[in-house]
Image (cartoon, rainbow, N blue to C red; front, side, top):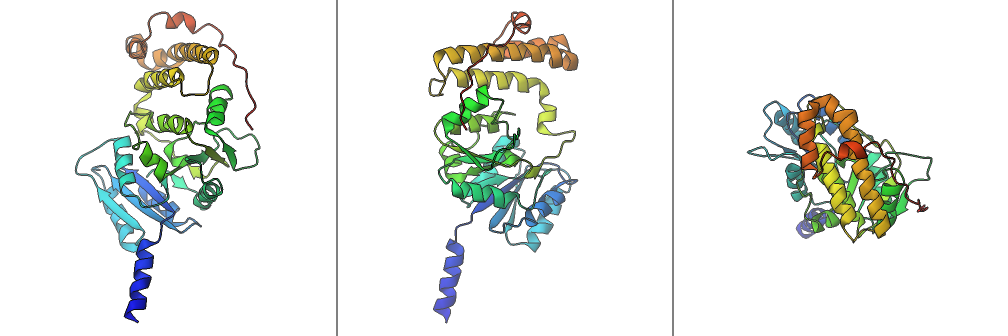
Length: 310
């Protein structure tokens, strides 16, 4: 009898967790209970919920620990000092045991069917490195499978396929670890990872609205509007110049030109309005550009031949 019980315990311990839900938090006492409740309400039950608090000064940890006491699938960790957004996401991933990692931010909510839709699609296309909810749906039959080069071409020439944040994405933990996690670049590390993964692996796109993403003051992107533009521009410039991508030399030239035009337009339309000329000029210099960006902003973008990748 004891041997049977022991075998059951060992089997339970060794059972593979399908998905690790990762929730990073910093001063989210007003929202974290809703975020946790949304995960617990999932119709997919084979998950662990890892909450990593980044040295909050409010009741975030107290609230999270109350849930930890009630559900053995929940584990709460508390950083002794603030790491910042992406380093803390990497910290949370270091505790994960699941085949997949699924970020649900502590101010967002996942829909009851969100995990099951994502996991089902990833299991169906098990060579995909990651998958995400479609941000620009156009009546597709989901899930949609793309080879990495197809996804990149559609993204750069067909309207921004890869515009997905961590909360709308599920990632193969094996592939996440192969890249060493997020690079840590502020505001853009998630998007940078999607681009890098697509250089070598397929991707799956799910139906839209599987996660409700809350918008409020004090969010990371809300605080980083100014530096985001030059960081985003430099990321695109470096990636387009990387010969590992699927674009021809002529396409790279057109893409680089288009992103310069786009940066110039953003300077005119947003940054000067929000931050004034002096601070906007700093963004231009940080992007490695000069006053010519003001002239190029008025030029038409170069058309790339769109290739059907459906």
